[in-house]
Image (spheres, rainbow, N blue to C red):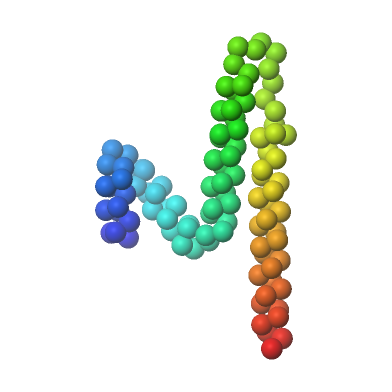
Length: 99
């Protein structure tokens, strides 16, 4: 944990204790549940970037509405990938126990 703190302080010296705890939690989540953590991170970054893109594309338009279907499109893909990974892990465990 000390190496995580020291690396955090070198990378982000001004974020303080809240940022440090958030960073430590994220690193711990990466170690404990790497696939789920990366999927959630990817989905969050995609949603934020798509929201920004939609805003930039439609700047100045008065009748613009946020396109939720477009923003949530990647979420469905990530969800299905998690289900497929879980299914593959289950099948792998079943085939190993059969031997």
